[in-house]
Length: 438
Image (cartoon, rainbow, N blue to C red):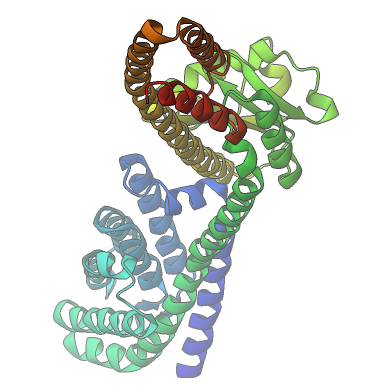
């Protein structure tokens, strides 16, 4: 009988792993596990989902001496560990109530219902440690064995007659402890693949985003309003990704666009208006549906639009918009990629703006220095010429012409920097005026 129990539990574990694998392929379940864990709606849905898994385990269990040998603990305990207290307790209530009603008045109905609640509570208590990575495989194995041990103790405390409860515990304790503990590791490992896959995708997206920024760096240094450079940046993004179109906008118009032939003739104003409206909240936005007859219907019928704001110095300056082909999977990864790429672009634009401001400040400092030097030079030159006028009027006339030529060239070359030749010419003329006083 013991070998039959092991085999039955093994089949049940295989069924649960298959269910878990299928669930991780459903976009909304992946989204709930990865992003929406803290919302009330997500918690309710996950509790129902794991509660149904525990119900399936009850139905697929094997009846033995008035009890049902099953893998219900896996669904309930996993609900607590993955989803937290509300999900764990919710799934435990669903599974426990069903277990009691499934075999109402049965030998172990009440005991199994109570133990199911205890299992959900145990998973909830260890949820924070599990999600923070402080519980490894061995800890999960020990926890599962422990809660199964508690189930055996509850059967002994509640189920009557006591002698029958003892006989039942002797028969089912070892198979259920060992197989359910191993099954829990495999079950959680299946869900863990979602997180591993997401981490891998995130790393790949970041590598791609950094590569795009590295290629675009010479163009980003020119700033958002350099149309030629933004067109080059859009070309780099378009060639590096599988997007159907790339748009870079400011707060009023599209600065650059690169698109597949099917989208080359799209109405730019139709796309621009919702993009500009969406970036004011400073969050990336995704447009994935429009009714027939609405302006964006022709695009959103086969594509989605992902718009992420470009922010400089805490001000929204424009957007980076990607139009990608529709897939059946959730487009959260596209939203994250566009958001990260726009953030990296924003950082580079800010750095270029800071560099530009630094150059302006340096230029202003030199201008201020020149404005201080020029009056002193003029004052000294006029004093020298007035002194020469008394003894040598012709020489004074020559000096006035030299001074006039100097200032004419200064006004004509009103630039940030002068050539060495021009500076040497200025110095020669200045020294020529100065020597006349000696």
